[in-house]
Length: 155
Image 1 (cartoon, rainbow, N blue to C red):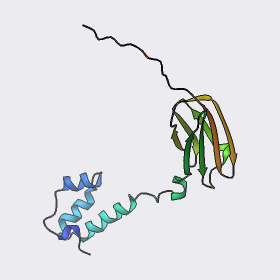
Image 2 (image 1 turned 180 degrees about the horizontal axis):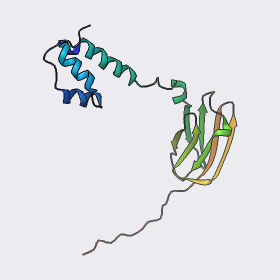
Image 3 (image 1 turned 135 degrees about the vertical axis):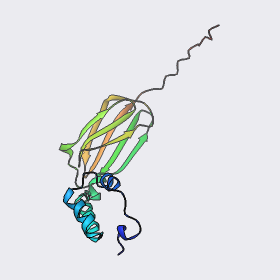
Image 4 (image 1 turned 90 degrees about the vertical axis):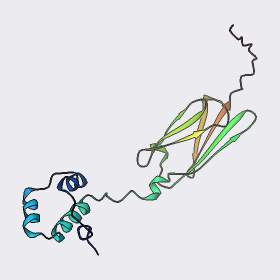
């Protein structure tokens, strides 16, 4: 494999320091000047880049704690049904509801999931149940505001 340093004139020390994110040790600079050979510098840079590699990412299964979330709007109620992966335990979950959304906290990897309701609900009426990795919550619908209000245009 061709070296970066074999491809043309060598870059300035300042550029290399900026690339590495730290100062070059003066011993290396002296070696560079004496040897007039860039292969050792290429190895040095490769070692630094190998050390700087990010650790492997968490498994994808952890990212997909919520497998499927559905909402259904009835005449009087809104039903939310959420299917979780096998890694999720109901005792770890915390549910927080507003009139517009449901927030689920405590998923693996300190993740959270938000479900938006198709219409407004009374958050305090929510009743949850857990059955075979499926969380089902029922909320009473809040009627839409149909009161007509007259608006005035200022002159």
